Each structure stands twice: as C-alpha cells, then as structure tokens.
Length: 358
Ligand code: CA
Image (cartoon, rainbow, N blue to C red; front, side, top):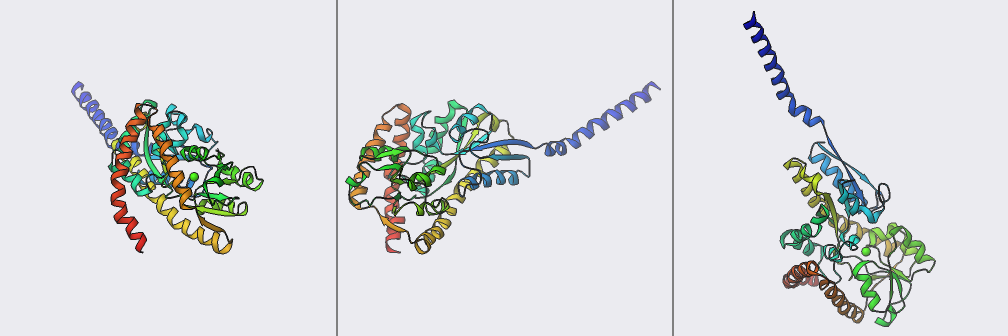
C-alpha cells in the first residue's frame, strides 16, 4: 500500500510538475507587459505625435503583444516639458520628445537634437549610429536612469513665417520671433528678440502682431496650423534646424527588466520610426508646399546670402560657447565637430554635387 501510495503521489507530482512546465510559456505569453509612453506633442499631432503612435504600434506588433505601449499626449500625465522627469522617475517607462527640451538639465543635451548650420538628417543619424554620437548621448543621460534612442527626424526645416521682409541683417534688429534653442540665441545676437511659445499658440501670436515672425517645422506642419493666413513671407532655408533628431527615452530599469529580444525590439522599433519620419516629412512637405504655393499663393523666399553668412558666424560663436561650458559639453562638441568636418567633405562631392546638377 505504502509503495503504491508513493507511486501515486510521485506520479501526481510529476504530472503537476509537467503541467506547470508545459503551460509555463503559454501563461508567460498571455501576461503582456504594459508600458506608458508620455510625449511632448499634442495627441495625434501630424508627423510628430503620429510617429510616437507608430512607435507604440510597432513594438506591440513586433512583440506579438507581449509588450503593449499606451501613448499619452502632452499634458495628460505630465506637461510637455516634464516628459524627461516622468521617464527618469519611472512614472512612465518611455517618452517621445527632443533632447533640446531638456537643456535645463544640461545644456549639452542640445547637441543631440540639432546645431544651427550643422548636420543634415542623414548625417545626424550617421553620427549617432556610426560616429560615436549614441554612446555619448547614452553617457549624458546615464545619471538620470534614462536610455536615449533616435526616433524621428524632421529633415531641413523652413526658416519661418515673417511679416517683415528680410533684405539685410539689419532687418533682424528688433524682430520678435518665436525660435527656440540655439537658433534663438543666434537671433538674439543679431539684435532680435527670440521667444519660445508652444506650437498651439503660434497662429494667434502671429496674427495679432504679438510676434513679427515664427518658425515651426516645415510645410506639412505649418499648413496644418494655417500659418499662411497670418504672415506675408515664408523664408527658407531652416539654417537653425537642418536635421532635427527627435528622441525616444526609455527608463533604464524598465528596459533592463525586459527579455533580451524585447529590449532589441524596443530599440530597433525606434530606428524604424527614425527612418520613417524623415521620409514621411519629405513626402508630405513636398505635397504641402505645392498647396501653399499654388492654392494659398504663399510668397516663398530665400534668405539673402549676406544674412545667412552673418547668422553662420553668430551660430559658430554660440556653439563654441556652449562647447566650453563644461567637460561633458566639450567632449560631445569635439566628437560632433570632428565628424562634421569629415562628413562635409563627402557630402560636398556626393549629395551636394548631385543636387546641383539634377
Ligand atoms: Ca522648429
């Protein structure tokens, strides 16, 4: 009897143990990990907000639902400019925004978005993924418990909408313009007054004359805000934002807690969106520019060479001052500057030379 009981018990245990083992992966697969993604954009804002949505959808799809991400627009969980803190604390596991929004943490973060007269979208991605930029970016965010990834690029922006004709550098004097970041500091040195307003306030500010000019992004986003109804001139090129990188930020502990394949899915989905956004902007800007010019009769103008030359001199001053702020800024600047000098030679005889003869 005793032996039979033992066998029965043993068999039962084996069956139970076996069942647990067999069922383990199924149970695991059904238990989805749920993350929050906070963004600096209004929910579903064309190009910027919709790219954050795409990133979340891609991660859901690529992980077959094992990692599900819910996207929140600016102000839903936290104001736009607190996204970095929310991810740093782990209140949300992920965020989507731009590094220059966190310059209050460290001014060197601005190098990871864009530099006036700096790298184009392709060159910027090249520096980040193949020129040491991402390692420096990761190091810069490390003490905040945040991992960065490039997750979007606008390409070359427009110089902006002006109610004043810009013929010489003197026309920038006293110009009240919405232009954030390093570009704003450059305008200040040219005698203008830079302001930073959220996108949603631009139309009214321009229309009422509270500002004389504003930059936003490019035709696709500017058409969406109706800025052509509030300004006479639409100037190019966007010297201040030649290839702005948008970022995904991920809470370091949350990422480390994922299985290796999920970690790879998160980081590679960012790379997909980084590529997707720049091509989406190229396609939509082209169509929107056509609408602005042919339907709305917008006066599109190139900034005079002398104005661009002066802005370039001032930009170099601003960037060099930033580079000399502290050791971290210097290290990032040196990497970026070395890469820029090298890549410019190749770009000159490839993209530039080709575009000039096309
Ligand atoms: Ca802009």
